[in-house]
Image 1 (cartoon, rainbow, N blue to C red):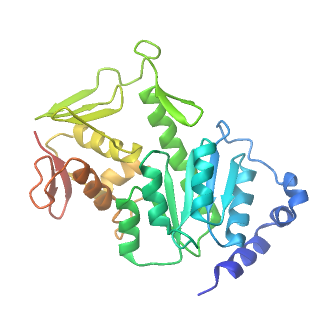
Image 2: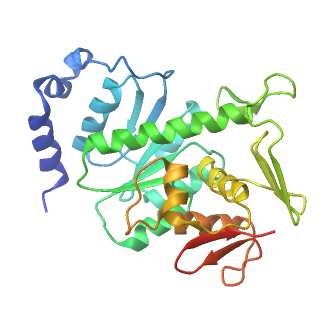
Image 3: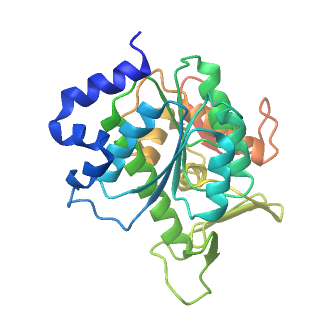
Length: 288
């Protein structure tokens, strides 16, 4: 398998001279920005001990107008998160001080911005562990930077939609929710109450028997979709393409892992769940 270093250099050489200029820090400003991108300035955190990988990702992300913070160890990244408002993090699993899984878990203790895991490992258990700890997506090395860029855009788009629907605004490092009446979401009045499980699309909140449940944007959208199709068997393919807005592949177990994480937060018995039932050979169903 081609090494990460050689892959980065080989890919950079195959793209265009404009991207090669980015390896010269004095000329990084010459990279052309995609003016069709409709967004505010997003802050992206990259944590990877391979300098060539972080440099290459910085080229692509900066060319799209993102502001990049890059680090080579976990502790420096955590310090940055405390100082700066971060909109999305890209974490390598193998780091010199703490592994990416531990870093992801620490982030999820306080923050809900999207997390994409990077790793040279290809074991399925690594992917499951990452998602169970709170990661939103997972990519293995070597990868195509354009694919990663597309996933970054998709995650930020969903996070933005989630925050707008919930009336969330950023003040410094913290998120606050708008007071009632400040803005009227499009889905006003969409509230589901299913045997003690209350899902309020208006405020993007969820509670079970009065206990507030903290879901990531992806988890909430999965739950919302199942509520919209109450008592109906929904295939994994339908659920994935409706929530992720991407093509589903047979080997994709992302839905399974996210459903497992939702059940865990709902204190569900995975073998005998009360709410989200597994329909064998088909997918999932939320029952009244």
